[in-house]
Length: 221
Image (cartoon, rainbow, N blue to C red):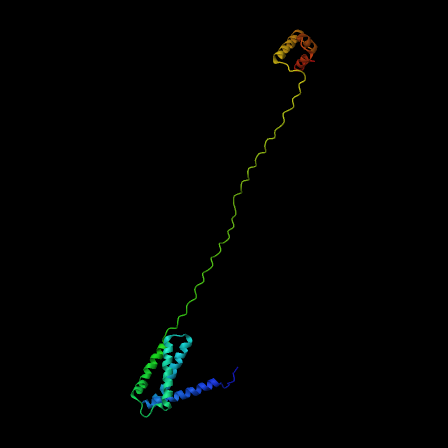
């Protein structure tokens, strides 16, 4: 898709200024003794140095670019002013001839330095520290079966003691009980039959409650 060319006032002004500056440099070089094609080469050399310095300035500001841009601008403006009638072009001074003759070497040096100068270093961004890697999750599985916790033995239940049959009657001394037992054994050996409670009571001659307690312990009827 082609774009239609439209006239631009700035572009037209640049073409006019370039043509006039080119003609003034040519006239000054011719008046300084540079005839033929050499007079046409001077304007080209000045304009090329001016463009190279300007491009270098746009890429990055440094002191050398400003220096060569100022030199090329002074050469262009000087030629414009010198050809305005302030300088007799038929009798050019010797110092101007020297400047014109030495310009090619100066322009070559400036162009070489501008083209091969290292680009201005831009500060590198500080490296962002890497985030510490998160610790991997580790699943632990036990291969051994855990021993069951020992179950405490229940406290032994206290079994109540069997109730003792209540003793009826007065307490019988052991000696008296032995004496009654001997009487009962002697009666069994003699008669062959166990003694009765009444017979034991008669033999002992003790109160009835005591005799009943003895008979109960000897299991007499």
